[in-house]
Image (cartoon, rainbow over all chains, first blue to last red; front, side, top):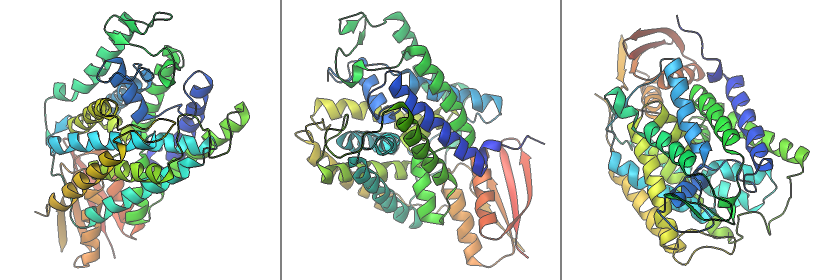
Length: 364
Length: 72
């Protein structure tokens, strides 16, 4: 008989939410950008920048938190015998969903994790983003009820499940081999930011350590910021939602204690006030996450467990970040990018197409 | 008579949706659900309990789980 998974209980998921909330807020105190202690979308975007997949000078850094998320989950999956190498559930669709999830998130300027942290830091514009997220997930649940399904995965070689974790280790190796040089925006093959959010980061070992711990705990508890709302809307189940709420509450209290709570709508860090597009960007992201079966964090944790389809989604997000900045789709504190609005509309059309056409009655 | 649900290779929320569909169909008092991840096992068990069903048995074979749920 296996030990019961305490993290899968109500108090387990709440504890994990509290842990993430406290440490996300502390990461800001230790150097990460404002209300961005953890933002999976922003951090993958920074990784894309560090690799030169886009050349937005202010957002270039290999974020160790992302590496930690995948490796922490992998360690937990191996320790508890839950490593299950699998793939083959419509990978190309997952790639496209990843691309548009990233574009939607960068129009809002944050993923669901950051929406929660922005709210906990007093950023009123996050309310619009969260409402958009919930609305997008609600659309996704309508498709799920109608039989939307990307099909079954198949078991694969253990090594196939290792591909994304190995890529993450490769990124870590690059970060160690080519550390930031004071006052220079290049070091070896990597790009660094001299100003802006990309230049703000906690020390490497702290970022990596917190990332590993969160990856481990999230694998055990199945923490998911999309599933939180999806399960509530579909089944009136509050299990994952209680973790999400715990995250917001813990980050809020920590922000109050360390003096990071600044309520208001204007002048919030890395945020804009074009509320319609804060909302619409997150509708797109929420719908894409719902169709792909997990928030961007959960996709990293699943990748660590050996889910190759989640890994494809992650790569889609990183490539999407390249498009978002090269094409002027991403927003900035001044407002939406020159083609951001068009990209959101195209993304919504693509996601609706996927939702309407990819139905499979999986009864056998 | 028991009904079978094969949710192997599917990830959340599909296994739960399939189980609840079967529960709502109301044609049976015992359902066997096959899943292949620990997460699906937990989610299906949790959903069944919240629908007022009892998780009668969980057996593990290789990388698969068979969950038997029952309602009196």
